[in-house]
Amino acid sequence: MKFEVLIDKNCKEPKIIIHTDKMTDEIGEIIKRISETYTDTITAFSQRGAEIVECKDILSIFSENQKIHLQTEKEKYTVNARLYELEEKLDSKIFIRISNSEIVNIRKIIHMDVSLAGTICIFLQGNFKAYVSRRYVPRIKKVLGIRR
Image (tube, rainbow, N blue to C red; front, side, top):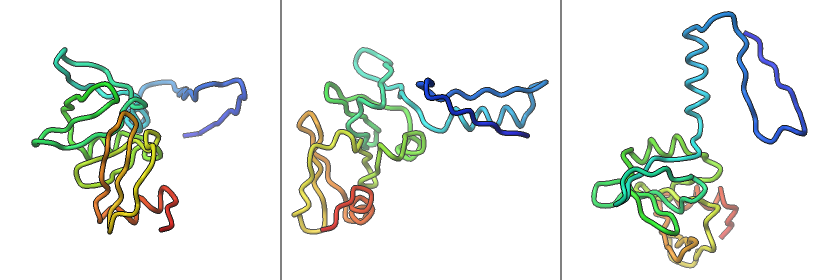
């Protein structure tokens, strides 16, 4: 199998094209893996029913009352997936786990209080707060470049 990458400064979004004489299990597996890499949307549920939520709008995803929820600035949704499954599908450069029960969008962080003994309080857009558990503090500090 050959791979070819073409660099085009006019290209706004990457596009993958597979040239082949027939569909094979190997090509099917490649397509499956590429399409499962990261997701731009998550299907979530509100009082109105199923909705498509764009990942860029998500503040945090968390476990509460044995259900998984995602929070945007406007609304709280329920998701039919496990936290680790969502963590695998989300872009790890944008979403980071801060505890066993929560993942946050680092692009939605306004500021952090690192003065708390052994933990970090994260303030997110829309007046939301989240706490980094002690177990995740070293990792969060490394990812976000905190040296205290």
